[in-house]
Image (cartoon, rainbow, N blue to C red; front, side, top):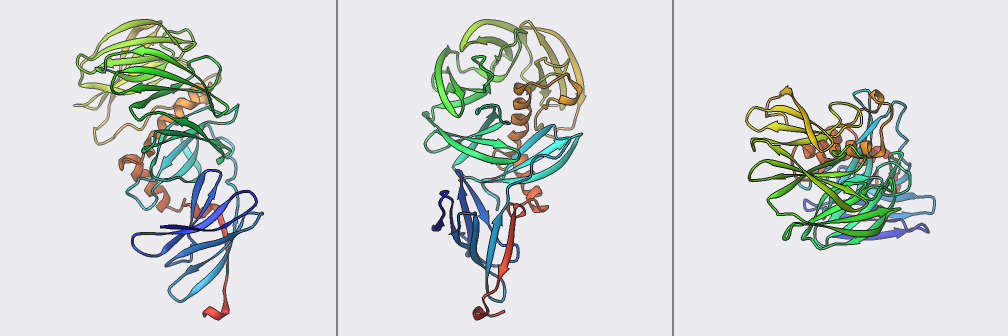
Length: 389
């Protein structure tokens, strides 16, 4: 159960909710996201009861002795430090104490440079993908409600969620197939697929709104989406499908929301499973990486002009190591495109889907190490002498 207790002129709401094991947690609802408020000195409950127009929050927390008042001043996350070339987003697993909480980690020079909380969203909202959905800001996040099918975009800039907007509702028989720029407007679009018919539908997104839709056609459900990339070498966002029965690979060239061509790439044994699409053979390329489910070996298939031009073994890694994703490395290329960065962040964000897998473990470990929502909050305790020490 949750209760609201205060609201300010900006529409920010504070209150508290009860947990199953007893006690309460405070919360702040702002800009479409929830942030849990737990005073670091609390051993029992924390409750928020008021917020002023400056965003300062008052409430109380309970320790082993008595109740104590607090004043909380919320400060925005600082921008990424110098040298940041990519970001990683993690989500607390639904089975964890951090369910629905999102964190962002700034990465550069093969190291995590900083980490911050983005906020908390209800656990019925699941991560769908990342891309440039609003103007020229940095990569934004799309979530989907598992009960209604509603999509919500969260604009992210300088390590903070700056805005939230509902995109609309689509029936749950339409599942997300991927994100790419299918209409060449430099913005990221969404591809959905009907899990009953195999039909593909593109949703063009610009400035946090769906600006158009286009039906691409129907493909048998034994053909599964592997990924998107510039496989035709025409600067497009093409789609790669694989036959789940034969291992056959087929490219569908997409331009201006239409399938303009198709090419069969060949067949690979089903013991080789999709690992990712990345510029392995050179900057700007879209190569296919597969992994052997028996040996852990990785194989890259270089693709250009809708054909596999070569295949190279990358080596084997023990199967107790699961793939998180592939990332573009901007410092080594002339320039990283927005699509490259979106692919990078989306691949890495796949760690935190809330399924209880490796991503959930990473999120829990990171939070336990001290990167919790409280780290972005500054609280000053105010003791009420009438309540004791």
